[in-house]
Length: 619
Image 1 (cartoon, rainbow, N blue to C red):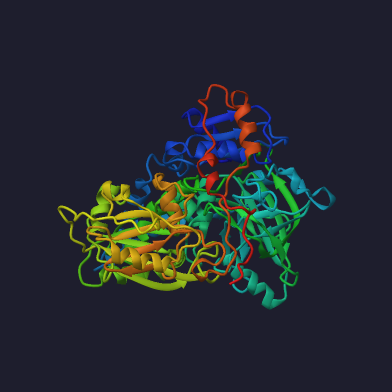
Image 2: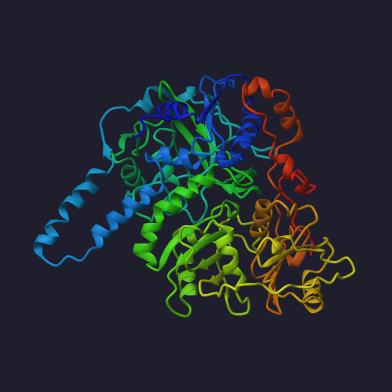
């Protein structure tokens, strides 16, 4: 348990997990560039504390950006300890109860859980030592960075947004980015699928102002819990209490009837008026690695700002994976595996969300496959479970528990897949940030049944036959053990025509998938290639099965490729001016630290010739 961001930072420093940046660093892009260089290091680099950024408050980034720091944030040595605790809890709670005395034996368990419920206390908390109201309200008090060159403004990226159900009074804490818009207003980016948006709709129907209180910092267990995919009605601070083995202490907001963690670093109180016209928010360099483009969201009006006397401003940088959110997602895998297994799908033995899938594009489940259709039943069930409805590509295996992340385990399973009968393409909700779907927030998803697939001892070779320079095929992936090859398509090539010609002219042998990319995608970088393939592909519109081989069009769909008719976002990359400035000042900013090249240099060649996003194509 941590009483403040400062106490967590102190632990990180004693464990060699923190770099203090003492030289002056601008909140305009420079904090983002230095943070990105750490995030992309093997294992997530180190946390950064920017002590001099033109504000009286330091800025901390990448605090949970490694498996070790994520475990430290939740008070364990390894995340699997939490899985084991939850397994034990479910085993005790769901064990057969035969007698009255057996029932009495459950009382200590109920007492344990009751002890972890959040506790309300009177008076002010540490988060309310300094108070700003009326003309003293000024959001520029907070050192909020500008994260990406085409961002619409500075964004708060770790806000714990507290709202109330207008009908029941039930409390919810969510994490929705907030764009600063002047001294006393910001934009509230809650998506239509989120609880905050549902509460907003309730207040709109009632014609009432919606109270909202935002906290930043404090115990990282509370910050994590705000990101957790909890069912409606489950208090996030009960989860935080369970994780930290001590209840969260809450105090009442000064201008709202909303209770908040007493140890937060900053509190921003205010309201949203549902009758007010929504404002244009964005663009924003998002966790998908692409810009989320401008859209309209509610305006948040600030009525009060408070903070601790020793406040630190914590923030997270998102963008092209891997980033800090990779390790937050890793915690979610370990924490929610038991509830999924016990309450939803008992056949699931393990799960893994590769960082390249940015949480929702790719997920792997290992299952105890017992009967025909078991994998597809599991897929359909998971697509209907909370935030898993946003998943686009799901791979189901058998016997890979503990090694879903290992290509040597997964590749042979995929080699045994028959695309004609082992793929399920469906439609449903997608994350509103999914830019490849033909419709906003709705599109295709695919499940791959590799759970029953045979493991071939050897794979048939294939014969590449060139087609007048079209779809130049590279067999490096196949030689590495994957049942796939990559190819190139020009912007003018017709995907289906090329796929049909390739299928007819080439003997594919053990190849199960052909991934066709733009010329500017570095397919030798496996992480970037997988990220692009899952992000830029709609499994229905951009995939065709011919002769037992899946052909995928992984190009950017700019200009109406395959009939795509929405705006297409650009990749998030730092500008040359900022990169060069950090390069020049490296020894001053990071004395004693080995020079780290800007990650943006790897994918600046993939940028498209427009700002944050393209115009709508004319078809």
